[in-house]
Length: 404
Image (cartoon, rainbow, N blue to C red; front, side):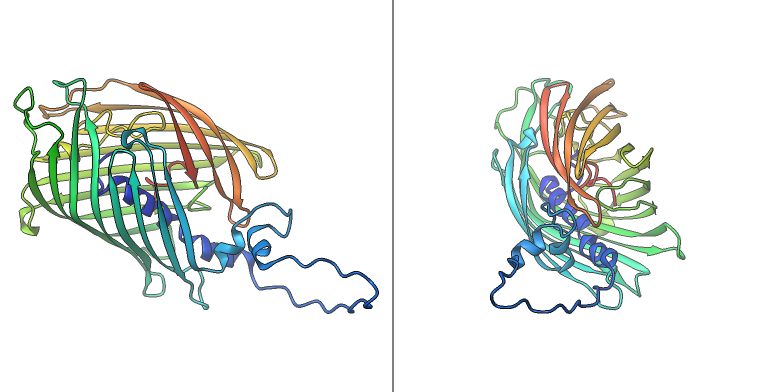
């Protein structure tokens, strides 16, 4: 996880919900037309009648295997509350709540509109509130997303001249992001512009640093950026893929033409591949390359993004994060997961960060199939990295925050 996105942890949670938002449409589409009603004779009054399940039971338990399942709840659309549980040690954990509102067109349920509002607070005093909306226009030919957030985040950076770390707080007076992608033909390609505007007030946690720091702390910073992204997506599921490829490249330019106090550029090249070896064994692999160039603030520098590596622990001008995962279904709805990854940073011309060298992390976990009709999984991972053990609660795939 890096600090490049505004209110990273809050927007991460909202982003996961936005990625999960097509669930309602997928469930409804997968379920198809409801079966024709079956008329049966009413038993005589003297015979005991079968116990009727409550509506609550109907929407939270599967009618096939009788186990806990949220497929029907998601299919109904409307309002869905989503709890947020943060286990990231960089912010001392935290919690929050999101409210998701789904509008599903009757003529094409896949073109659902999602509106999400949420708030969270962490153990180290970070907090965030935000709104995110995504949907389609022009009969699904254009996919859009925009959001706004406010809050603050306290983190520790590790410059090469302060190996013990430097604690700082970024307060976001506002952060506004948006994108629109045009689907090219009927294929998996899409392309379109993006925007990113922020006003940030940064502050060090100590007033008298031991050395002169080449950072832009203790000041207000305005940024305005535009960019473009090219995306490719053949996943069979947006939240817990089993097969397919999700890949994209993005370039974003922060410029004074859009009111920015600094001029710099950000680049991303991400790929996530999935393959089922048989009905019970599944493989996944990701490669993320992130880079910042120009006069970027140090807290915009990307960081190694692996399970088991603390957020912002290893930053640089260029960062590569790669991870391999294998999962095995051991019983109905239950599966085990094992993963391992390696990442590295390059400081480039930065005077702040040094080269990290290769950093390894790995671990394992389990998953429960939370929504059978669309294969949505949730579970727990325990990872071990350079600074010890970290556990993560997962809703959908562990890489969901990086994928489209």
